[in-house]
Image (cartoon, rainbow, N blue to C red; front, top):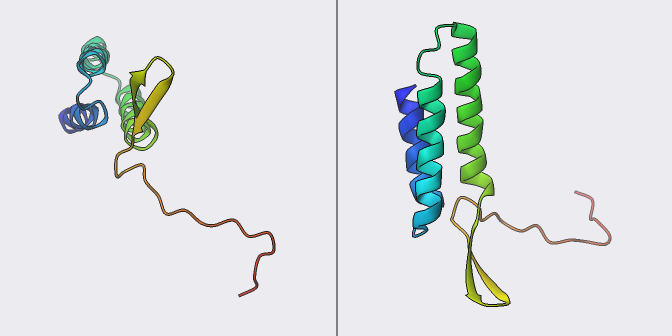
Length: 97
């Protein structure tokens, strides 16, 4: 449980780097969820909560991207290396291998 708690906070720091408002909101939400369930005794419920927390970490790491407002009508996206993938070019007529 502690390992996953720390992993969520590390992921939060990486995903929301340089965004103090998002960093603080994510910190509060992570701490609140763990605090609300700290007295849970059911092993089945604990495993379910750990699975949810693990899924949240994966979603944060692989799906969330920072955007910075530069002008009133412009946004700059700041992708992380975890989000960048090799692009496969589109072919109208696929070649057979």
